[in-house]
Amino acid sequence: MITKDTGNYLFPEGFLWGAATAAYQIEGSSMADGAGASIWDRFSHTPGNMRDGDTGDVACDHYNKWREDIQLMKRLNLQAYRFSVSWSRVMPEGRGAINEKGLAFYDRLVDGLLEAGIEPLCTLYHWDLPAALDDRGGWLNPDIADWFADYGQVLFEKFKGRVKTWGTINEPWVIVDGGYLHGALAPGHRSAFEAMIAGHNILRAHGAAVKRFRQVGEGDIGIVLNIEPKYPASDRPEDEAARRRADAQMNRWFLDPLMGRGYPQELEDVYGEAYRDFPQADFDLIAQPTDWMGLNWYTRSVPENAPDAWPVRARPVKQVQHAHTETGWEVYPPALTDTLVWLHEQTNGLPLMITENGSAWYDPPHAIDGRVHDPMRVEYLKNHLKAAHDAIGKGVDLRGYMAWSLLDNLEWSLGYSKRFGITHVNFQTQERTIKDSGLLYAEVIKSNGGVL
Ligand SMILES: OC[C@H]1NNC[C@@H](O)[C@@H]1O
Ligand SMILES: [Ca+2]
Image (tube, rainbow, N blue to C red; front, side, top):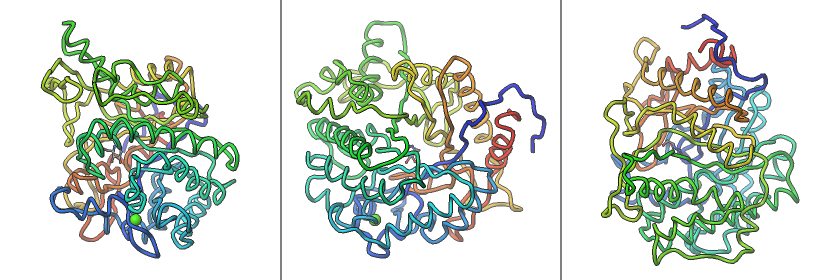
């Protein structure tokens, strides 16, 4: 592998290098040891929802292989590991009783990480809502703000002094756009009216958890947003208007209220009669000051005006001049630099962390001679780390980078067909093999970017 240290892309001293996963995508054993079902247990077991009928019943069997996976993290020189907790493992009904065995899994994991010198970054919620709460309306029920804060308190107290960096909710936009607007993700609803309500309650729950954290927690807390920058397909006014709608519906819907600016005005243009406003007290709760913000970044899009494309009336124009990943995402690293600079400004210089970045490419189902050559992922990783470095050079306070993902895993309704891992998983044998991209990443970390 590369050993030359150019020194051209050295990252700041103390920059935090890690990798990310999420509970339902890697753990398996989702009903073990008293755990309750989540909406993803139900959604994945409902015929027609999942590519190839895949479910998270086994996934990467991380629930049993977590020690081996920590050893894998050490071979990758990881300094940090971003994971999420399954709410229904810890609280089977989502509220009230605590399942000590479920909590004990995360307790062992956190201690194992600390013993390995790897900093645990904990996300409270990465899409796997307890089914029992969904039965009570889930994100449509305003009470969920308190349910979520109570759940957060269990973890804040349990891991006080061991977990110092907390993320409340992963990607509110995907939860709502996928789960309540278009229905491609759990709980599979399709309603703009519900989308507005669920989105608002997600933000309220975030605020309630931050408030509770200030009372009982210790360390830093923030939210994790997916941002996909929008570039107009042409300089025609209707395409610029489409860009503004797409930017408001995907990027500013959640960012603006979190920054105390309320919902972007274009949201009413997007949702029409489904748009509604809410009491100021909600917006005060939502805009609780946070200590950092996570950015999940994969690609950009180039929308044009499309009156028939419900509800945003914008359609991305495929940028055929650039490579596209297996998930159909354009590879365009400069847009990451743009997003980081934009987010730095939008948050008035809040410390940022890239909490997810990566790419799905075709990989073989098994390693060959103990190797998995993934040149496209190597290229994507190198170029996006350089783009992140460029943003730091422009004054962005970027604290770290978490590669998505540590392992090939369940890409939600796309099943195991999309491999994002820097480590290959043979799902027949559960054998892990560090891919070339992982080997490169280990060198990047060792040289703090020097090999780029
Ligand atoms: O699509 C790749 C990733 N995007 N952010 C959320 C993760 O759960 C996904 O696997
Ligand atoms: Ca579960």
